[in-house]
Every structure is written in C-alpha cells, then in structure tokens.
Amino acid sequence: MKYWDPAIERIPPEELKDLQYKLLKTLVYRLYNFSPFYREKLKKAEVKPDDIQKLGDITKLPFTDKRDLRDNYPDKMFNVSQTSVVRYHISSGTSGKPIIVGYTDHDLDQWSEALARSLTACGLGRGDIIQVSYGYGLFTGGLGLHYGAERIGASVLPTSTGNTERQIELMRDMRVTAIACTPSYLLHISETAKKMGVSIKDDTCLKVGVLGAEPWSDKMRNKLEEGLGIKAYDIYGASELSGPLFTECQEQNGFHVWGDQMLLEIVDPETGETLENGEEGELAVTTLQKEALPLLRYRIGDITRIDHEVCSCGRTHPRISRIKGRTDDMLIVRGINVFPSQIEHVLMSVDGVGNHFQIVVDRKGALDRMLVMVEVGDKAFSDKIQDLISLKDEVGIKLHTVLNINVDVELVEPGTLPRFERKAKRVIDRREL
Image (tube, rainbow, N blue to C red; front, top):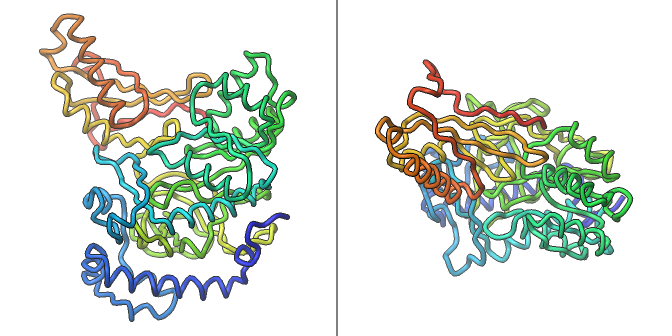
C-alpha cells in the first residue's frame, strides 16, 4: 500500500480531532478579526472565538452557502488582499453571476498536496504518465490535476478536452498509464478508438482512470473497467473548495477527505440539524486552512454520508460515500454546473422569447447533449423565417457565453410547453448513468 504522507494519512483519529480543533479555533479567530463578512455573520449569531472550546462547538457557528458567494460577488468574501491572490478560477453561478475563487500560494500548495495524497491512494506515482483531459483555464479540473500529478513526480500530458483522435494517438504513442477526465469523455474516447481500429485495453498502457466532474454510476464504472481493462476511481471536489480534491483509494469504498484541510458535517437539509455518523444528509464543509476564500460550515448541496471508521487501506481520515443527489436543481453537463435559473436569466434578457421553457438533457453516444426548448412571443412567431433563425442563434450564443457549453436551442409555438399548477418541471434528464 502506497502513501504520499503516511504520518498524516495514518494519524490516530484522536490526534486528528485535536488537530482539527486547533485549526478550527484559529480559523474562527482569523475570520472574526479580519473578515468584515464573517465578523458580521458571527456577531449576528452571537458567537465569539472564545466560545469555541471543543470540536463539537462548530454547531454554534452559522452556515454559509452559494447565496453568500453570489451576494458578495466578486470578492467580498475574500479574507486576503488582492496582492496575496496569485490565481483565480471562475465557475458558474445560479443567476448569471459566476463564483469567483481566489488562491494564495498556500492555497495552491494545499490543493496540490490534497491531490498528491489522493492520486497516490489510486496507486499512481513517479513513473506514471498521466493524461489530463479535463478543461484547462477558468475551470478548476485541468490545472488542479496537473499540479497534483506533478507533485507526485508523475509525467503530465496536458491534452485538455477535444481533438479526441489526437488524444488517442498520444495515449498510445506516449504510453500513458492514467487519464483524468469525465467518465462520459472516457467512454467517448473508447468509442472513437474502436472506430480508429485501436483497442484501449490491448494497444495502450492505460491502467487507471481518475474520473469525475459529473455524476456516474457503478454500472458505468463496471463498463469502463471491463471494457478498457482499467481501474476507474471517482474524484470529488467543487470550485468553492478549491477544485477536484479527494478520490477513492484502491479499495473503492468512498472518498478519503483529508481532515487536516476540511472539517465535515452531515446536516438535515430542511432543519440544518447535525446528523449522526452514518446518517444520510447534506454535506457541510469547513475549510480549515484556506486563506483567500475560507468557508465556514458551507452547505454544498450534495447528499451523502460520512464514515469515520478506519479504512482497510490504513488511512484514518473520514470518507464520504458517492454523492446520492442534490438539494437543489443543479445539473452537471459535460463537467459544467448548470442551473435552470441561469438559463431562465438568459432567456428573459432576449427580446422575442416567451416566459416558458424546458431543458432536456440526453446522451448522444457517450457525450451529454442539452436542448433548451423555449416558446417565442406571439409577435416573434409571426415574423419571417430568417428572423426566427436569427433569434435562435442569439439565444444559443448567449447561453454558451453564460454556461460555457454548447446548447441546442429549439423555438416552439406559444402555448406548446406544459404548464404546472405547482413547481414547474423545467428539466427532463434522460441520461442513463
């Protein structure tokens, strides 16, 4: 069994709790004294740093959520000056405003350290060649895995996304041993390889897939492992937390979450009450060491459970089970978070479209496809065909600008889409995971 840092990865559970308490105490002190946003929030909750006398006192602290990030756009929740921020990543927001994530040197170091431990837990290390086929740029996936792979001494092939045939050639020619990408993209790579007359199992050295950024099932895992001859590991993270952070180990029995970086709780989605170990609920995360964008009891919206038992791999940090669902209506399409409210925000800004729309998500081959059907206004529908084509193109361009993915648009007659007496069913997800 390989470890990146055995002293911390196998730390006795009681010592880990003591360390978490010290880090939490320091975090609350820092936020109370140096963050206008958190000082106001803590004062409203009538909590002072001295009130945190044990780890369980975290329940005295207020929650944060995506609304706080949205309302304090772009950087009012940052706890360092702009001169200390060395990188920004930007993810989608719920209402047209993205989430801005800043990083100090320390934050980037901690991110790479988390991924170094995680990639080592997947059996990777020096001598491996890791093809990073997540998107680079504003998206956190590509650069996150890139620096984590370099930290463990692996060779990195930064292919990013697209140009699939070229990716397959490089995978074969460069003797790639691991790939980091979305599971649907790896399935697409497999299908494209077959058309090229290439067998991933027989003609390449691929042995590991580090797959995430979208939900996928054990059924897809089995299909990938059996079809490609690899071990497929799930990876978990979120832009607000840094990006991709935590993977399964070789036991494939939950994500190892590094407790010296993140303090986890499972809370009741309705009441916010902390649930017992093993109960299923909403994940709340406190970032114990982040400097630029620290998060206190951040309700991330994912439904899971925590297992505090020592893993059979020997690692003592808590594990969370694979994500069972969401507390909100967020979709993940080709690794990108998409909220129906974002789409509504765009549509309502376009003259000529009506108030009713529907989103259909499906798979074309191995890749996700999203169709937005929107009713046009009475006047627009009576216009010339060329005007309707122009309107459709305008909607498509604006959606791509906000969502950062290509969207198919279909204009339909007024009154065509269903009406609902209660909550509108905006999304039809036909994907088979």
